[in-house]
Length: 163
Image (cartoon, rainbow, N blue to C red; front, side):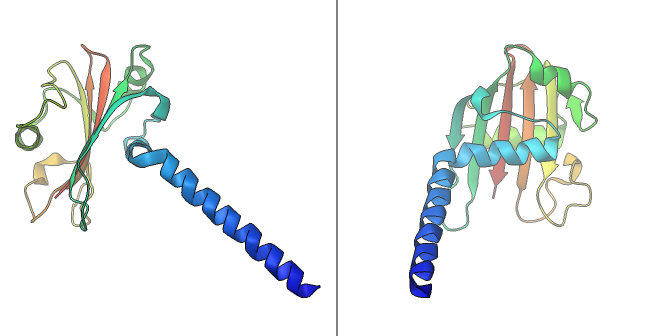
């Protein structure tokens, strides 16, 4: 009788693990980027508002770029952004702007936003102030998350960059 319970528990465990694995695959990479951004930017962004995703993260080290475009036609995100301390008014400061121009030189994933807000978070463990983009070029790699809100198009761009 005990053997039947062990087999039954093992089968249930396999099904639960299979369900969790399939659920994670179903969420896709955009959920990971949106979820991380929501936490560090103190701005709850919903997956359902996503209108586009570009992702070049692949390979062994996971280097790459991802850009998630979020629609804000109803204005729920800008209302929150204006009250948050870590969001700054555009234009984007020179260090970050220089790097973004290099990253997006070959693509048109995000526009040059003049009227809006931006957020920066340095994901390097050696960064003294995670929200300060002035130390962006210190070190050998750049791993950061950036949010750019365009007031004119009512779009939020979530940028995840790893080098």
